[in-house]
Image (cartoon, rainbow, N blue to C red; front, side, top):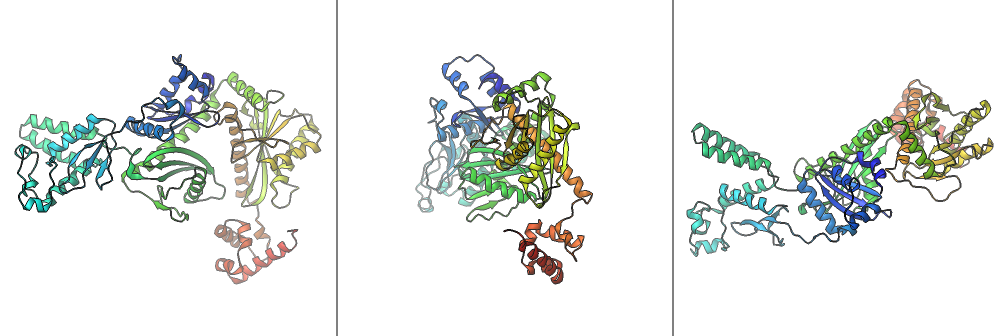
Length: 606
């Protein structure tokens, strides 16, 4: 990746802590790095003279950059280490990835000890961590020792041994650091209550402890004991500043899939965090278009199924911000109210919000570029698509319909990389009966360029058809009938894979997603979609569309609207048995509707 290419994507990188991943042209992971500020750290690879051959070779191979936002440098550090150990990227080979991090263990034994360890043993003990700083762990343990009396000796304090009087209290008891459970001076219940307080501290539930020290500090101030008050203040400050655990590398989480969603109008954005072994190993955000007023729950359910399929997830738990109906057998749906899973949902929401913000920044950036920069984008499109000339005039077509009925088409025009709204056109379909997306596209293209040919107006250099090979072939049939072959280049833009098709080609063209040429093409496609949907809404609001139900003698608009509201589309109504229709509109009207569709089906070729 060149410095010029990087400058096109630099504004999309976040100024937050997190990890970044570099991929090559084969989508192979080259490098994983951590950063306090992702944008600054990644930019440093492209904005300075590279001192080593290894770094120079890495930058030369980079074709794609991904990132995951986390809450702190500590989380970034832990996540980087986890990903390097799991994927062993080529350019991370020389990193010391065998480092083990310290944990705090509450030992599974009578009167449990609490201490630092680097080894996890499956003996029923409870482990907290890992932590990035040994010094912080020791400070925390020292704080616990000064605050909550605990034993530190390795004695086997079974009830039987204590009753036999095998042990004597040690110096720790006389110093006030231990209450002497070895001589039955402290009950096991009282000791376990102290262990519960320690667990709260280690889990980050510090509010009660902080409040205790605030009360203590106030009491010392009132008593003019300022040295003691200062000690209490330091404890409060330490507790408030100390992050005791990480959610991006917490083995107790196991394998879970975390999702969040934000929706704006008909566009929803869904973020996915894949957590395996307690570590976030994948982050992905997608854009989902809804067309039939689907609920937020329905959109999220659809996106979850798609993302789990794409990433081959076998996690048996899904964590989401609200209740959904997810029917996959053996999969638990969790809506967390607190704890680590709630923090993961919040982290997912943070990532999806950044995705939305970056999209808006891209739009503002594209709208605000200078004429020379816009022309450079057009030059890039010319090179990427191997066009005979610079596409200073681009037109794009899209079809739209309402619940599977009454299609319309829209066309937008871009001149010199900017919208030319005076050249936008709308088409009420005239020659096509029923729903035929291919024929509808052919009619719109034919009418547009027949008019330009008749009036002697210049043709666009590039025509984008929003759809796959079928829509593209139909559009090209119109061009052939008008004898305009060679006057313009037609390409189809597939909606799902964001890939381009040329007439007659078997293989598609996939431009780099963050390339300037692909950004402009997607922007044109989004604009024609917006324009067509708005036109459709206006027509519906004026009552232009009459659904086929209202053509049935004996069925009025209120009955038709009730059926549509219940079954969502005319096609769904057609497929319902008569008794289901009767539950909504009564027996007599259900019979009329069913007879109409039966008669209509009997005259169709299929």
